[in-house]
Structure formats: structure tokens, C-alpha cells
Length: 321
Ligand SMILES: Cc1ncc(C[n+]2csc(CCOP(=O)(O)OP(=O)(O)O)c2C)c(N)n1
Image 1: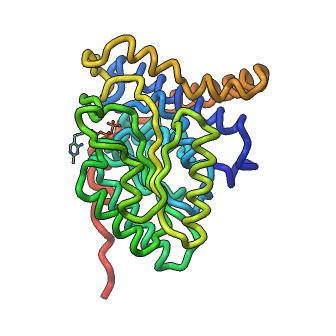
Image 2 (image 1 turned 60 degrees about the horizontal axis):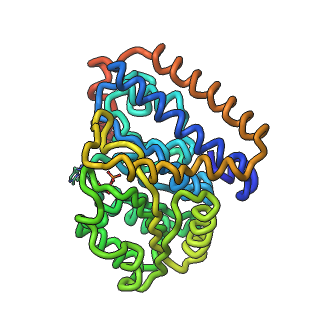
């Protein structure tokens, strides 16, 4: 569900609706988690919706993205079906990975989603390799690599920036800075500003208000344009705020109430809604409720993943010699 599928790139209503879909999807899964219906861990991206929607809006279906352990918003923005996402998180057979993997194991190559990932920083080399593949194939598609500010401390981050810059790979690195690295505030984990590291690798580095959907969309549009034109990578640091603890059930006692209140006051949905007429925003909200209701119904009606699917897709078919 991105610009090429839905209309003009400046369509504020459609972007708002997509952010709202992500918000309501996660709120619903969070409730299901507390009802005991989510068999695996759950990392919510609530508060970060504008990074995903603005970051993916400029893409077309054949462009690719790599996501993280906190990636429901990326998946939905790239066009994943909410019902099959919900089924996956609830461990049901109709989920994208047949209910075996949960949110950190969603890959939908046919829409260019090369995977969420439980390994922090694991998507960085995958995205860089995908961009190299696009370049070798002579396609004018691009790769977007989402990662957290904690992931940027991995050595592979520097390796990827170096390679991408040297070879002018068609990739945009989007650091989703939600101010926490697992349970640790970024102030004691991250040295300096991540976007400034771009200079050392001879590529543009941008700092963007990640709660401003228009600013995000515009920044990524520019970076995608460069990448498509063969001008190489861009590093974007999107400043946002993670509303909840690291995982569902984390009471986040390490954060004080004032900070949470201030962080939530920058709600990207409220800001996006302010640019719409109340009637059109209400209609978008109502459409999302219908879609989420149907997604939950679909997931709950789907059978639990059974033993029979355990090894499906693990081994290649035998090749006749
Ligand atoms: C290689 C690896 N090391 C450690 C972990 C445990 N872990 C899970 S999330 C996380 C922090 C990630 O921080 P960040 O990249 O900022 O993403 P955020 O959770 O804030 O969205 C860590 C250390 C892991 N999953 N993988």
C-alpha cells in the first residue's frame, strides 16, 4: 500500500490512513497479547508510524525494504495484508510464515519486503546486499534499510556505509531513533549524532523530524531520487519516540512519566490529522476500524500452526541432475 499503488505521492489522507492502520493494528495485537493470544515476543512501534509511512511512501512495489525486530509499521506500509500479519502474530496457519515465526520473521518478497529481523543490525548487510543485487541486475529500483540507533553501534553499520558509498549503491539508510536501545536511554549508548557519520563516508546525511509525515516523505523522496539516478546512498536519522517499553509486558520503570508525556505529545497521527478536514479524517478512521476488525476475525478463525507446517519451506526440492 504505497504511493505507486494508491495515487499521488502528496496524498495526505492516504498516508494518515496508513499510519492509523499501523497504530490500530498494534493496539489490537497488544490487547491480544494481554489476553494470552500472542505466543511469542512482541515489540511495538507505536509513536513511530510516520517514519515507516513517510519512509516507504516514495517507493514503488518493486523497490525493496529490510525491517527490524520492531517492524509491523514497515510491513503494513510496504503493503502487507493486516489480516495475514495478525494471523502470523497470533501463531496461526494463515500467517505469512504459517504462524511459525511471529513478528520478527515476516518476509514477503513479492511486495519487496525482504524481512523483519530478530538480530539487531541484521538487516543492514541484507539491505546493502539487496542494493548491490539491484545494481548488478541493472534495475532502477532502490533498497531502504530501517534500523535503530542501537543497531548503528554494530561494526557492520560502518562496513555497509563504506561499501554503499564506494560502489554508489541504490540504498537509503533510515535510522529510526526512538531514543531507547532496548532498556537503555540513547544518552548512555550512542556517541554523537548518527546522521553526522555520513560525512565520514562521503554521502549526504540528514536529520529529520520523524514525527512529521511530510518532512519524512520529502526527505526520503529526495534520497530515493538520488539512489534511482545512480548517485548513491543517503543516511537519514529520523527523530521519533517509542511510546511503550522495549517489549509488550515491559513496564518501562526506567522512564519517568514526564518524559513519556512529553514524548507522546508529539504524536505523529495528531500532527497528520491537523492537516485534514475532520470529516475526511473520521472517514479514514472508520475505514481502518473495519479493516482491523476483519483482520482480527480472520486471524482468530485461522487454525493454530500445527506440527505439519514445522518443516515446510526449510529444504529445497530435490533437483534432477
Ligand atoms: C545481535 C543482537 N544483539 C542483542 C540483541 C538483543 N536486543 C534486542 S533489541 C536490542 C536493542 C535495539 O535497539 P535499537 O536498534 O535502538 O532498536 P529499538 O529496540 O530501540 O527499536 C537488543 C540489544 C539482539 N536481538 N540481537
